[in-house]
Length: 145
Image (tube, rainbow, N blue to C red):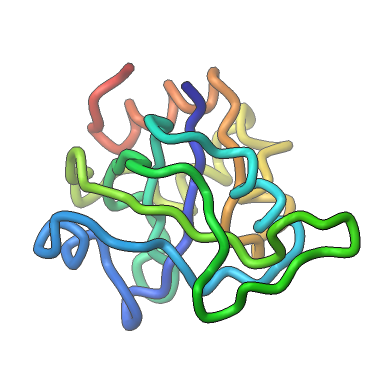
């Protein structure tokens, strides 16, 4: 199972909203690279939810409960015939600690120097390599695999 980091604006949707709702469709991603990463996800994969804005930290752990599928609001296909705008369903797993896995802490840790959260700051969905997954979960006080 893979782990992805999914970024959200806390004014739009927060991890607390996912906890309240119990399940959500993760949508609104338009960047081609982010959609490429989302197409690679599978049901059962993990997702670290990262809130931007004033928070800039991992706020929780979720699980994909569906395979990626076409956004019903934007069912376009790429030139290669793939789903252009991807969505999937998530459910909450665990809330992060309040002071864990902040962007400042991530940037200060040399292990994350090549991580897309640091190198491509506007990217809203990205895979998390296994070694960084363990480190982020530990920083955020989240359960390991």
